[in-house]
Amino acid sequence: MKTDTIFYTLLQNLPSVLFELLEQSPALASHYKFSSVEIKELARRIDGLFLPKPEYPQDPIYFVEVQFQRDDDLYWRLITEAFLYLNQYRPQQTWQAIVLWAKRSIDSGIPMAYQTALATGQIHVVYLDELDDTSSSIGLGIIKLVVAPEDEAVQEARSLIDRVQQADAVNRHNLLELVERMLIYKFSSYTRQELEAMFGLTEWRQTRFYQEVQQETKLEAIPRLLEEGLSFEQIARVLELDIEVVRQAVQKQDEK
Image (cartoon, rainbow, N blue to C red):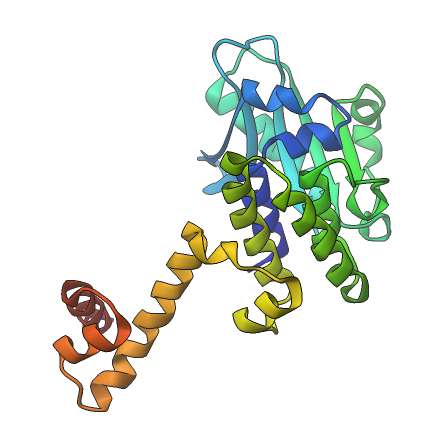
């Protein structure tokens, strides 16, 4: 999974982290809906868009761009997309463009044409590797985990998991699922069994994401079992799947 994709997943599931990065109240996340929108003129989507809910018309629209590699055209592209969106949807709110760079060294700098927008706060730049103390925030802790060098990431992950385990029962389940996604991304060369051993994880077997991945793994095994001569009924029993799920998986494979 691409790093920007994993960050958009984080923003979608824990939108309060954006406002923490902007040094604003995390409670502002309740004013917004995170979405992506189609820009007809470009035949592409804006993936990181925070739109104020109708009851908060005074709040600005946020266009969010996440970047983990050098891109000299990023500011030109982001502002162009913002203005095309404004022209297409004609919102009544003000707006800001937020750029989340992995580190300062890959930022080629804001073009002179947009320096005024920077000075007035319409463009806001954050360097994720320069975040200060993240111990009080699970969202910022997740970001620290993703951007940390591998030799520091294990300790960051353990600290993060400890904080998640202390959350209330309702939030703990959702946070654990989110951390699980980040761990699988960050430590992609490790098996799930190795990750469980490294971090002492047991609850994540109950998360929806874990169950989805488990099912995907089982579905990937179906063609091999068919080649071994097993029937649909036998495969369903071996993989602990409903027989109709097996039939649908085989049908999809045949249609490719």
